[in-house]
Length: 280
Image (cartoon, rainbow, N blue to C red; front, side):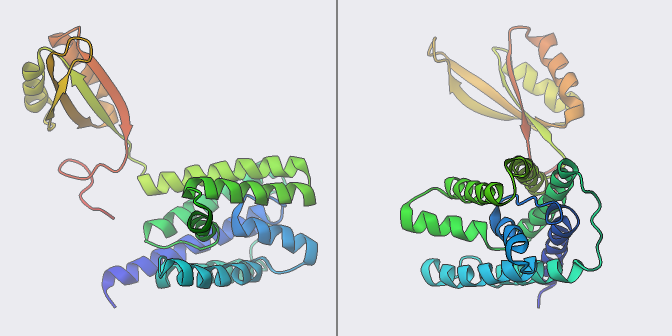
């Protein structure tokens, strides 16, 4: 087995365990069913006393098999491994990990963080834990729903189900948990180091470009543009900088052309010289 593959499975294991910790220590004990298969399993635990991990496994494995039959081996062995690891870790850790809070707001926040970071790590190592993603893909295949809309429908139905069984208030906490999970997944996927992308439109583009290259030691890409009102040809300078360089760049541009049009936006996962060197 290749070293990279071994690292992938270690990452999937760590991510699955973190997700299980979020369920065991925060979400399940406080009846926070924040969408997905884990949310269904949480509700069924309180109705029938079924183990959460075993219930997730019982739901996920048939979905996985249907997915293979209908969609082909889309998720592969890594996802099956993620499903098994998350399910087993959830039930195995339950007797050993204590509930850290009985405040539903804290449970939604920290449970969402643990689950989101864990799932983000699993996704980063090219796997999923099945469930919601697979159902969304099946909805897309059979009914033409987009993946995003499918995920929204599933999570809405799960949280509604939880609201009926538990209470509307706990359903609202579940929405908080779902939102935090989503943001934590994005943070892990996109990285913690947010750079800035700048677009500069100026009649003094050549001089600005030279100053950026010489004084900031940053690369500049020159894009061809055209004014929408004047139809005049324009050069658009694209430059990626760190957050600490924003003020310096604005000052540099302002000193050359006070009429320059500057757009500054957040950029994630910048790869290349001067930034991240790896795709992993």
